[in-house]
Length: 356
Image 1 (cartoon, helix red, strand yellow):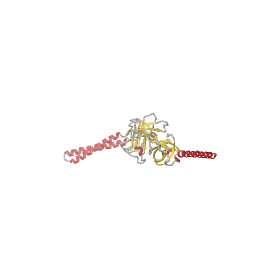
Image 2 (cartoon, rainbow, N blue to C red):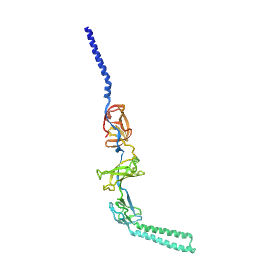
Image 3 (cartoon, rainbow, N blue to C red):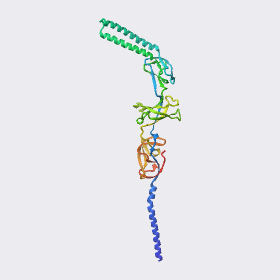
């Protein structure tokens, strides 16, 4: 009986260890799977409207300017203004030497008088039958031509001075007093101060196609720190500049109290009205590797918990965020911390990180 009880105790002990061993073996796969999931932090791809803005740099110009010239050649005898001078409408800015203009007028008038006398003589001869119809027609044509030349000379006499067409500022002076100027050659460039200022800038072709007339813009200047000026697109170039390859646009700056001057350099942020939706953005830390406008990120599949290596197209970088133009949709979770330890398709455990 003692032997029988000892065997029973040994059997019970063996059974207990066996069951315990079986129970421990059953919990091992779950614990192992949990241990194999790589801990990572993620951020969701979300809209970033400011990344949709088009940024450029330009120079301030008057919305309207005049290039002033003489209609006739001559010597500039009077030049009343310097660059930067303020002028009033109707003010005389420059004059040609009147002796040259008067000489041209006298010459034209004398030619017209001579042609008129010749026409009168030919008419008498034609009436007497001593001049042909062709001779009469030639005399009439000559008289008509010289009268027109004399009239043009009298008109040009009135253009021997340059008068300011509006209140403005002299932006450029192309000639000095006593200099010889050709007909139509620029003498002065005048800004119209009754009009507003514009910011003239260049855009790359991809940006020029996104901009439309009337699009809103915000302009800032180093000369006026802390101030933002509202503007709108008023002009878009039809063809690219041959030297820079950019399309020229102009943005009219809204009226304000700041003393803007032609030539100031400003920075503009244009918001395209044709933008259908805000551009998606992700933290720059999510980028694994990039080449040009393409990059690789890990996107977590919420159904399986696996991180999938994904190719995306990127845009502008600003404030720690990079714009994503293709490859992701809103809400996709990208790995921002721990991606360097992942392989494609590997399980991850997630801790959410802010994308701001």
